[in-house]
Amino acid sequence: MAAHHIGDDIEDSSQGIARRYAWIVFALTFGLLISDYMSRQVLNAVFPSLKAEWALSDTQLGLLSGIVALMVGLLTFPLSLLADRFGRIKSLTLMAVVWSLATLGCAVAQNYEQMFWARFLVGVGEAAYGSVGIAVVVSVFPREMRATLSGAFISGGMFGSVLGMALGGVMAQHFGWRWAFAGMAFFGLALALLYPIVVRESRIAPQRVAKAAGAAALKVGRPLRTLYSSRSVLCAYVASGLQLFVGGTVIVWMPSYLNRFYGMSTDKAGAVAAIIVLCSGVGMILCGMLSDRMSRHGPERKISLCMAYCLGSCLLLSLAFALPFGTAQLALIGLGMVIAAGTSGPAGAMVANLTHHKVHGTAFATLTLANNLLGLATGPLLTGKVSDLIGLDNAFQLVPLVSIAAAAVFLLAGRSYLADMARLKGEGVEEKAVEAAVEAQA
Image (cartoon, rainbow, N blue to C red; front, side, top):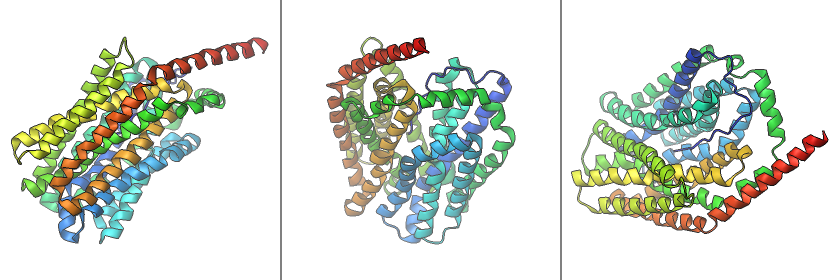
């Protein structure tokens, strides 16, 4: 899953915006985020149907899932920049139309090649929605509500994933896999048509705020170097991506696993897989809260907890996939996924602590890129290749071992974490002194 950080703006952009209108904006933007993830994850629920109808290999199925994450990772930066320049509301609307039409293209695809290019376009449409959508949401609420709203908004990814797999499985079982895609597409198109009618750029982005933001952006120079200037921040990017390799792979392939080895129909497999996804979402929240609580007086404890989450999930998931098929195995998979997702919050906090506040948005986009390239895109594809060679059940026994590599990278980050934070703090003091001197001369 992607993380987004909200920097501290000088002006409160919510001034003059009625609270009722703000909640309407939130509801519609949140609804589109749910549509985003429903369109992305419905594919996982219909894997068994596609494999049977088109005689696809697991490698091919994994690529259909991985191409979306790959495009999201590659296009987040440029499309976010374009959205800031040409208007966020118009851009969000266009994104939703693109991914919805592309999902409809999946419904009418006649072969694997057509399905692949339709999924490619789904990824293009969804690439920058998270970063641009959260920017719209926080612009219409007071500053003191931003942490709550950003957390609530990001949770839409989990809800969308659950709905996409659960509803997709039910629709595929009763109406065929094509209608599973079509249902997600029609939902997205309906919201995309309504969104620009209700949400207006002029009402959520006053010109004075836009000018202030533009002026602040011009001052960002040296801070960009903090994106890559310390070993610990680079390790945070890599370790987060490696750990998402595990969680993302289990989510993508779980419906197929349940169908093949538990004999579940597509609707039941989608429902059980959705419960496992919810376990992952609960883990993000609970493990993040634990990290904040335990790191209050010791920032370096975040890294120790991340290592514990990685090794704990490796142990639980390895044990789960070594057990015979049954209730005990499913329970351990769910518990393992709770812990596997636990690094998302602490890793995001590390990135925030190790980069300049002026470039936090870019820093978290970099984290999103690493999460997609190392985890969400690579995991399903490589697991599909291994599955073709030794079977999906045996491939799943190897996947948790990647968490050991993630723990090792977190350990490397811990060796310089406090020193890198101290250096960044010192540079911040120096920058403020220079700015004060310039203002005094002016």
